[in-house]
Image 1 (tube, helix red, strand yellow):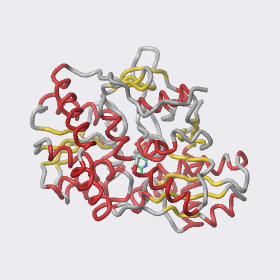
Image 2 (cartoon, protein in one colour):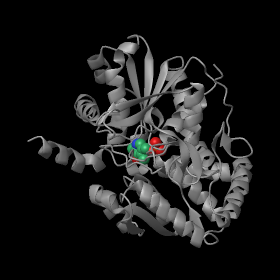
Image 3 (tube, protein in one colour):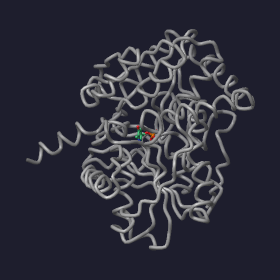
Image 4 (tube, protein in one colour):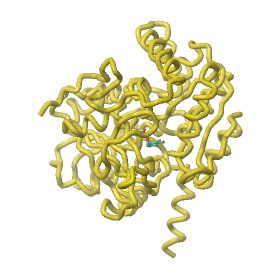
Length: 401
Ligand SMILES: *Cc1c(COP(=O)(O)O)cnc(C)c1O
């Protein structure tokens, strides 16, 4: 098994055959400009120190590695640890990336920030750093998601961002992303586009991954100290795939560490109503990049389904597609039903309400617990907290009354 992907992408912005830049010509120069600025700042000690300081004092890093004792007891093993990204400022891992990108935008002299958002977590993390750095902020969000995630919309407005409703297509994340790209094509000189996951044209998948790798770097150090050795396995939910790569990357060359990405299985992989892009998709082009994608026989992107607004994206980051092909990461899925059950279970056993996205990773652990020995340790990326998901829980409860 050729598990060495190195730390791609290659010079053409590809992870294996995936990735690249499928964008209008007007955007090409902006991507070149972004890439050279980013490569400069990656080597710049002042920038790195400033980033480190914001991650510590503003975001609240390092986040703890927490032993979930009662959840472990309930499972009868393996020993489960939560990497607590829910404790970050704004309640998820997204801010690790937006802090990095806003520092880049400032250094590049851009004053106007645009972003897309699904569940609103990336929009919120972007609106937050825009407030902190005094930048104009426009967030594109599908009308359907605005409806599902009202508390995050109110917060973005309070922070001074302009939330633009997108009513085209399915009025969800896919359409919000298309609209943000359209804005960028028009205003490319003045505007910095903060992408929220490891998706989009090169160099975004690389940049977002790099800013999220702090999750895995800390986890590696904490595992050696708290467990005494590296964990047996790492588990993370996969929407675009940024919290997963954030956790996995620091362990990529530790061949003994298993990695599992959990996609949204929705109503089941056979139902056609899911967002299991890698499990059920085929390679294609969406939003500037070549990667696994869910589309029909006419080449039309299929509307994905998930109980969580943060996972119902029909694409996935190109690096995940490459990792799936070479078998370095295993991809599983969790249904809506299992996810809701895990959401309640972990809330009640640990006193920590997980994001509905995170609950997919937890549900996978519950269902696959027998694949592990009770003595083995696994780390779950606890990507966010679940306050934002109370309306979903309420709606589900009402449905079943
Ligand atoms: C956005 C989000 C996700 C999914 O995005 P990835 O890029 O796959 O990490 C998962 N969990 C939470 C809490 C999120 O906000």
